[in-house]
Length: 150
Image (cartoon, rainbow, N blue to C red; front, top):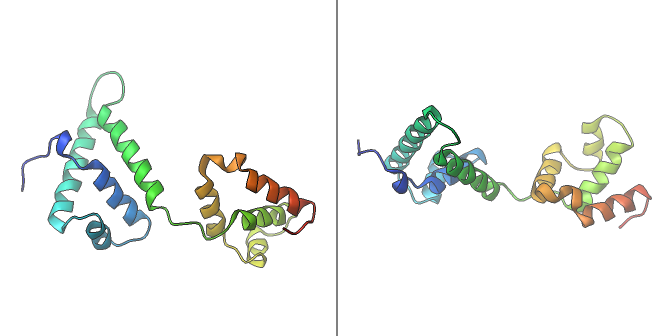
């Protein structure tokens, strides 16, 4: 076993990218190769991050340990990058929302529209925090609500 890694040696962003890749459906092997690690390197990195995370969570005192802040930022960034591209367009999202507003069993409504819940989640996720401010979505919703095809 190699000596413990110092915080400055922890490749936290690489670790986060591997974890996010696995969460997105890649195998552990694919994720480690994609990020330039062999099995031993990934095991060492994983152990080091887990140990440092434990120390940060157990730390006494005021405030949040800076490592936890780095960890959170690295994981959020990696998850955004690993997210698959949406399979539905903003136009399809608007059409589905209007169909759902009209009623019916949601899965059946989406199925008739040729979409799945995952399709909708993907496009909403791709819009992120801007989903409520997307002019393209607002325009598409208005057109579909008015019965106009775009």
